[in-house]
Amino acid sequence: MSIPLAEIEKGTRSEERFFEAASMRLHNTPPWLIGITRADIELDLRGIDAVAYVLYSNEPWAERIPIQIKSSWGGATHHKTAHPELAKAGIVYIVMFDDMDEYDIRRVLYSELSKRRARNIRFEKFLAKFVSSRLLPRAEKRRQNHYASEMKDLRFSQEASAVSGSPPLSPEMETGAEMSRSRLLRWLFPSRNDPDWKPWSWMIPSYW
Image (cartoon, rainbow, N blue to C red; front, side):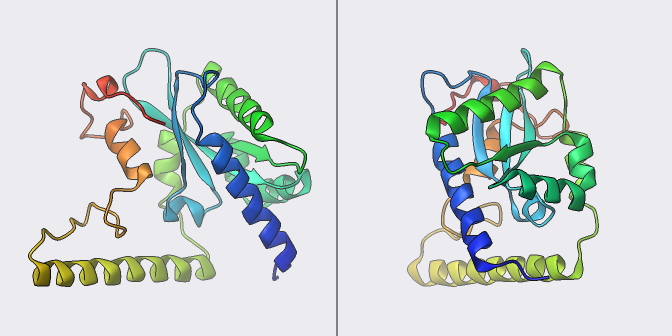
């Protein structure tokens, strides 16, 4: 079933409004909130729009809290029906009403994250299993096209570097010539299950 173009555009605007508001660090931003990033392709294809990196208690690592952004309660309800595993896990749903300003968006976001932090709800084990779940054929096709495009861009960058003599991009780097904010956050604040976790990572200040 196809989605009307108007609904797609409304959903896109809601996401842009959310990320614009959530990316700001103001005086009322909780100190335990490290940052908000867009979900990577594996999470996005499985129904997650964003990821919050949150410190729990005095732990030096950051935990990921998945977020889904919707433009109406009806959309949120439909998503919960289509993705019962996400609803059961307790991910954050942010409903973006038209009259919400940036302050309202941040207030709702901080409140929802704080509730899960206070209840010590963790998502790392769930997410590790979730990203290995089988995709629907249409989503799998999108996934294959995404990685094919990344590899094509990476090969182009390596060929250009060989001609210019500049160092080629590492596979660990994003194709846009810089590490993505999501990957950088995960490097600075890896999960406690990450074998590459560095005990000094908490000492690196956050700029988000």
